[in-house]
Length: 314
Image (cartoon, rainbow, N blue to C red):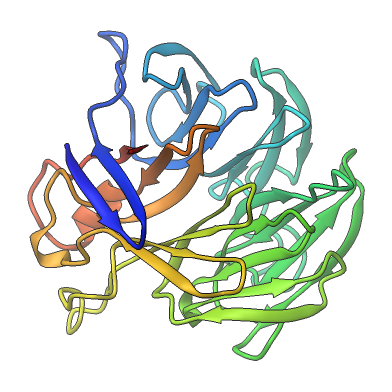
C-alpha cells in the first residue's frame, strides 16, 4: 500500500484489501458499484461475474455464473436494482440485490446494426435519473448513442451520432448523473465529458481529459474521471496523460489528479487502466481496472497489475 495525496485529497491505496474463498479467482474488474447498504459489487471477467464484498473486503456471495459474455458496466441505483451491462452480448440486465433477474433489454447475442443508432451494439454503462428513476444506457463501442428509459424499461428517447461536434460521440464509454439530473457522458476517443439535460440537450463539456474511461459523480457533485494512457506504438509510454483519476468540481475545475501517470513504469501500487469508479458513504473509493487487457496490449509478460483497488480516505 502507499499514499496518494493531491489537491486536498488523501488516500491510502490498497490492492490487497479483499479476500476470496480458496477456490475462487477474480477476473479483471470491468465494473464496480457500492450498494445502499455499503456492500461492494465487483462485475468482473472471471468465472464468478458478480462478487459481493462488505466494505472491509470480506467475501459475502457471488452470482451471475454462466450468464455474461463480456461484463462491462454495473450500476446500483437508489432503487436497489443492479444494472449490468454486457457489451459482449449486447444486453442490459436488471437484477435485485440478491441476483434475481427483474428485466432484460436487448436480445442476447444480437447486435443493432453498426452505428445505426438502434440499440444495442456493444453497450457500456447505465446511469439513473436521481429525480424520476428513469435510466440512461450508453451505447457504446458499435454505436454512438444514449438511450433513455422509464423505470419499467419503456424507451423514451435517444440521442447522439458519430462525430466530434456537440452531441456527437467517438465511443460512448461511461455515463453518470449529478444531483440535478444532468447527464454526463464520457466521449472517450474525443477526450471529453459531454453534459446534457435529461432530454438530451447539450449543455457544456469538460475537456482535457485523456481517453476518459471511468466516471463517478459523488453526492456533492464532485466528478471523478478515470483516464487511460495513450495507446499508439509511438506514444504509449509518454507520461502525464494517464493512467490516473482526475477529480473535477461542479464548476468544471480540475482540483486533483490521483496516480503516477508513468505507463512505462507501472507496478502493483499504480493504476494501469481505470475502467470503473464507485465510493462508499465514508468517502472511500473503489476502482475497477481492465489491467489484464492493458498489460497484454503492451506486450509485457504476466502477471498483470491488480485490477481491484480501494482508496481509503485519510
